[in-house]
Length: 565
Image 1 (cartoon, rainbow, N blue to C red):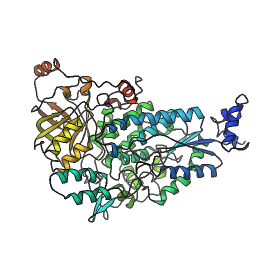
Image 2 (cartoon, helix red, strand yellow; image 1 turned 120 degrees about the vertical axis):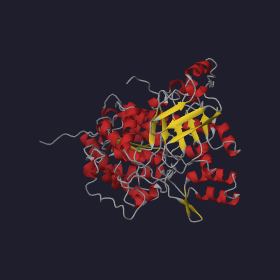
Image 3 (cartoon, rainbow, N blue to C red; image 1 turned 90 degrees about the horizontal axis):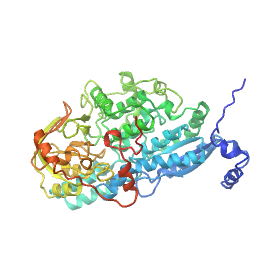
Image 4 (cartoon, rainbow, N blue to C red; image 1 turned 180 degrees about the vertical axis):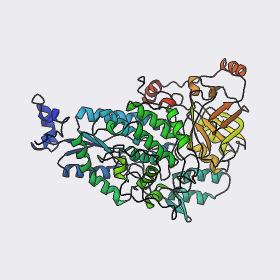
């Protein structure tokens, strides 16, 4: 008996319902013929736009993907969603739109795919919020889907030294204290980004691309293949075969994404020393997929997963170096062999993780320094730490590489905006032993929870990386390093304790006991509560006004869908 496989179960409504003649008429206008009306329709969504190196090449990949879809007897329809460049908007009011753009991306994908009745989806993200936004949108649709990561950028070079986007940020701090000349400064800026692709270190984009691959939502090697590598085009060429297999077997994202695969994905990202933004996005992804997972689950993983990736920002190497030693699969094979990954998890190849990794060679530690052995890790426990204490009763997220130590005690230097803090750092007003406090920059307070890469880069450029700490109710770029704590909740705008901190207060951060403490009495705290300055910014119209009213706290992933778990 021949199995009757339905590939076009969703598009069939528009192409074959006798009561929808206008739908067929409009599809004919797009170039379809009568035979094409029975083929499955695949939406191909990219975050292409010309104004950002992370995204400027994605339309090329989208067109190549469409060719692969059409060759496999399906109809590919390209459409776009938005993107915001974190690197370009950093330290400006535009940065407020970075995290909120994730919700627009997810909403737009859900809207187009469900409205147009597409049978499957190929997502092609490039920059930081693109990746979780695309994944969240795909999960909501329930359609068989595959994601193609746009790929990482190649390193720049100046005076025989590798450069990347963070080099440009840190160069300003170096120039301000006279470490480099203006001529050197200008050359670093010109040569930091040589072409297309996402920022090259283990920053947010590459953290989330490795997360996607370990999750099972991309083909093997997608996360470590550079944007400029011809293999990225080859990946697009193969996609038609694999999406048709998913349609055939009706493998949807929720059959791939579960607590075990999420754990796999976090494990790989943590082992590589990934961005703290991972926490925000994992919480939002799990909420979207109805998976019970919270920051304490991440805290437990941080206790078990050593950091073995010697990657920027805290390390030496870039994603191009991961590619050179065999790509993300070679690391995953190692973690699988050591019992840190669940090999039974399903992937978009239609196979399990362990099946995908069968032919991958074992990693060698003799001829490379990019990945360390688990038995001599860079850090025995995860670099992402979940802290609690009177400053953060609902939690905070720290990024502690160990290079700056694991504990810090110092005097507060308080700023009610990032701009004020940046000016103070560049004017050399920050001294050794200070804990810089940047508040009113949370998801509601800013609104939009901007990244604090500029102040942390200026700190590093000024040589204060191991001499000061920085805490905030905002968040950090994947390019951030130093002794930093973000995502403090409740945020200042919500009346959190961070709003009560005053200059010269003593703050203690302990990343071993996972505690952050404001060293004042409960009586003094109550006294300060009476005169608390709850700053609210009135936004009469626009997206940020709507976002500030809908957004949940950082410990809930800053989602705008506030359904109860």
